[in-house]
Image (cartoon, rainbow, N blue to C red; front, side):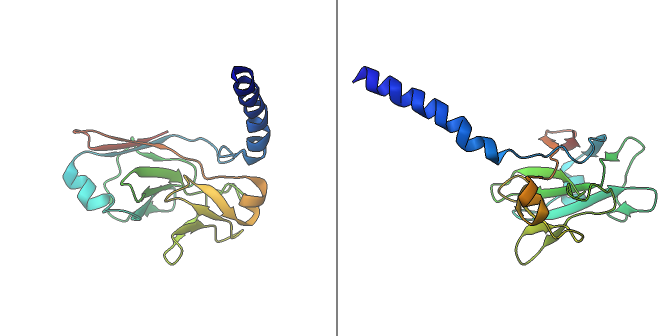
Length: 167
């Protein structure tokens, strides 16, 4: 019986890598540029952050735009390659992504949330991504075909500062 269990475990160990090898996700196509965004207090978070499950905001610092309008960006703030898509999943986790579509790889081609399907969609290639439960995995379009996921960043919650987004 012990030999059967060992053989079964060995078979599973050999089969598992073969079944998951095709599911590799490339979430590094978008250049890894500096990301630094700080919400200094709970009040800042309530004004500029997220309000609950499936809420989302965009933060962009570029030569031509600042989003959201009126946000008090500092000289230290950075929003990656295409900007930051900040979402809150159904469990209350804050997940930041780069807004740039990994298929297009252009800082100005940015995904947008479809309010009907709660997916992120590229306006150029029409790839869709699950940002609220599958961590930026592609669902359809060229991104799904080629295995390109959205680049993820880190969110850390504290007391002061209240929230820090970084890479």
